Amino acid sequence: MGTAYTTEKNTQILISLMKKHGVKKIVVSPGATNICFVASVQYDPFFELYSAVDERSAAYIACGLAEESGEPVALSCTGATASRNYIPGLTEAYYRKLPVLAITSTQLTGRIGHNIPQVIDRSVSMNDIKRLSIELPEVYNAETEWSCCVKVNEALLELHHQGGGPVHINLITTYSGDFSCLELPDVRLINRIESYQEMPAIEGKKIAIFVGSHRKWSENLIYQVDRFCEKYNAVVIVDHTSNYEGQYGVLANLVSNQECYIADCRKMDLLIHIGNMSGAYINIYPKRVWRVCPDGKICDTFKKLEYVFEMEEESFFEQYNNREAHIEQEMNYAEEWKNERKELLKKIPELPFSNLWIAQKLSEHIPDHSVVHFGILNSLRSWNIFDLPKTVRCYSNTGGFGIDGCVSSLLGASLHNRDKLYFGFVGDLAFFYDMNSIGNRALGANLRLLIVNNGKGAEFRNYNHFGSRFGQQADLFIAAAGHYGNKSHMLIKHYAEDLGFLYLTASTKEEFFKSMECFASNNGQEKPIIFEVFTSSEDESEALRLVSRIGEVDKSSVAKKVVKGILGDRGVEIVKKIIR
Image 1 (cartoon, rainbow, N blue to C red):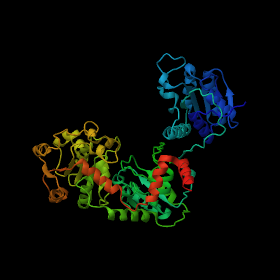
Image 2 (image 1 turned 90 degrees about the horizontal axis):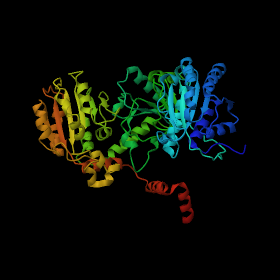
Image 3 (image 1 turned 180 degrees about the horizontal axis):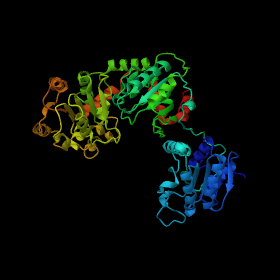
Image 4 (image 1 turned 30 degrees about the vertical axis):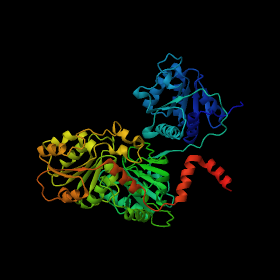
């Protein structure tokens, strides 16, 4: 034929993963928009192609072929109304749970609605013609390549998921006439495990369990995870919202967010990912990732996902605990993490009056069995550096990740148990956004709310934030400075006292120490407490810089990282030759 695969990257990824997932039968209808796909699969002897001019008939052919062979069958059609003719056959496949993959090729979707021939809108489809519908746009960088890889894996897995059924892929083409690609990319395969008999062996020297935000753990789950860690030399990487109370947990933020060096413990052979959304921004480097969740969804947080285990966490760990382990142990991995963090904690210098300083001093005084709610970003990040008692449960609105309801969430939780203390730590913008909630008449004396008032969204003025490059100009709109009384010392005081709160305040470290015991103590206080603490964005930024740049710095390795970031691997080699 004189041709090979198309150079269109999204099509290459689709074809590569079709081969890995065993989708080899394709019913092809003629057209121009699907030429890049069709000519490529025609070139590859792995695929079995069948021609059908009528798309309506093609879809029914796929149904019959899938039913008889017991294999998934793909369809390929061009643009215009070709895909509309698949509807009857895909409806049949949906109700019979037949694994039919409809690949509808299309022009760039930005052309929709501009009277361009053969361009129709496929963004909405009927509920009962597919289990899943995805679109594969052009691939032009690493991020879009990763997204394409995950989407295709998800689509092909859905053909057999929970009984199976039809799946739709809208494949965008640019009509590239270049078919010079001789070898398909080796695209990462993601598999879903639904049966205990299919569970792969655990291999590697360093095994970690990453826990996102998590509800209260059952005693059996803690037992199974601790048993797993002992057997497989594993560590449990957590933040406060993980709510893990076992023996192998490490608050990872201080170690994982160091800017001047990368500790060896941050690299692991296998990471087991459980829990929900994490707001900790923990930077670690796993070679492979297994996700465990009953919903079975493809959630590739670390971009190294290999398996999704559609099962309960307890069942997953229990299964592996009952298997023979083959782990080469060089040292205790949990202790490696703990020792690294312990050394960094020793080196934290005196911090400016800030969220971080407050968390450092107050964390030692939070009573056992309390509940803590954190505002997102600055509050949560600051408290994740320092330990709290294991019996303290912690939460943050990291699901939607907005500032709009953290005080209300705290209030709602506090209504459940009047005999338990509920602490909240928020910034001024988050408080004012949600301040009406504290006027609720059901509010009890068990609520403790600490407001760090720096007069703006200080997050956007931190030294390492994108917004900080604009300096003072960032205060105008990016950081929204100057609202809500512009750090008035009376506004929240009057509001809180009129609503029946005990109001405390501090603008210095000395003043903070004077009120800290009253705020944290469980001494039968008859009023809820609001503690307003005034800091500056400059001190907030400096405190963050100090805790992010401690530890031993290998200056030569840092220099190499900088040079490599600027010149790339090829540039580094050229410089080496010049030096020689």
